[in-house]
Each structure stands twice: as C-alpha cells, then as structure tokens.
Image 1 (tube, rainbow, N blue to C red):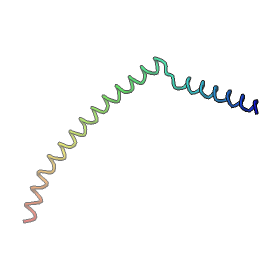
Image 2: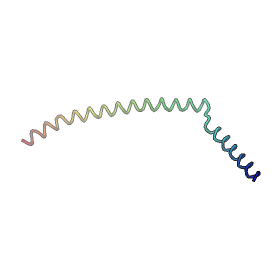
Image 3: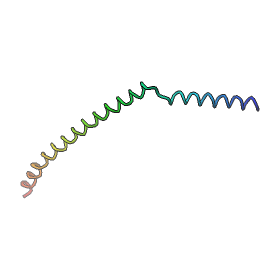
Image 4: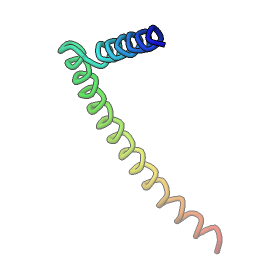
Length: 74
C-alpha cells in the first residue's frame, strides 16, 4: 500500500509540474496574443463598416422598391 501511495504522489507531482509548465506563457506568447487581438479589433472595425455600408445600400434600394410596390398595387 505504501508503494501505491508513493506512486500516486509521484504521478500527482508530475501532473502538477506538467500543467504548470503548459499554463505559463512567455513574453513572446503574450506579445503574439496582443498582436492577434489588435489585428482582430481592426478587422472587426472594418467588418462593421462594411455591414453599415450594406445596410445603407439596402435602405436606399428599399425606398424606391416600396414606392414601386405602392404604385403597382393601386
């Protein structure tokens, strides 16, 4: 039983050591993450602008279409 407990402790220590090394990130990883976030923010802003332009184009197309539908229904 004592050997099993000792092995279990070793396994726990190895697991803890492995998880600690994988969760710690170096400064390079953090810089890369910040760069990716910055890039995504710019891309997000560009996409929002495109969506706003498309919404405006649809709105401009709906007005004449609604007028045409009213004139043909009478």
